[in-house]
Image (cartoon, rainbow, N blue to C red; front, side):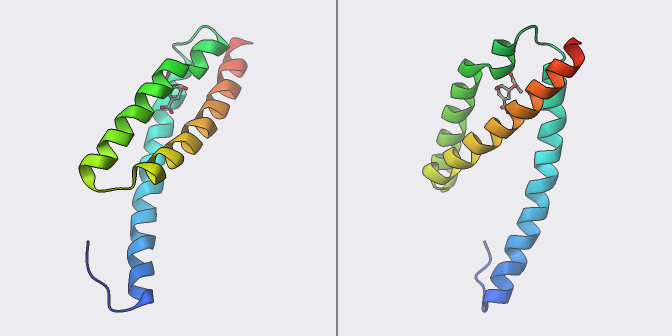
Length: 96
Ligand SMILES: C=C(O[C@@H]1C=C(C(=O)O)C=C[C@H]1O)C(=O)O
């Protein structure tokens, strides 16, 4: 992390990181969309055990990498919830 001399500089870094995060979310979303093709039921779409596993994994990664486990867990919970909604819509469309 670069120490900044102004709020503008801080926001420049935040904007740069946001571009990277959005690109990564787009790539992640592509794999979530593919997951729908391998599932046979709405329960399989939600995959609650896998969600718990992912949340445990990112909490541990946050601790290792000096991120806030609370922030990381909250972000992943919201992101996965949104991905599950999309995956449900996609799964229902392909089941027709
Ligand atoms: C991508 C999957 O589908 C859903 C989305 C997940 C995610 O975004 O990490 C995890 C589990 C499922 O709720 C999967 O089952 O792996």
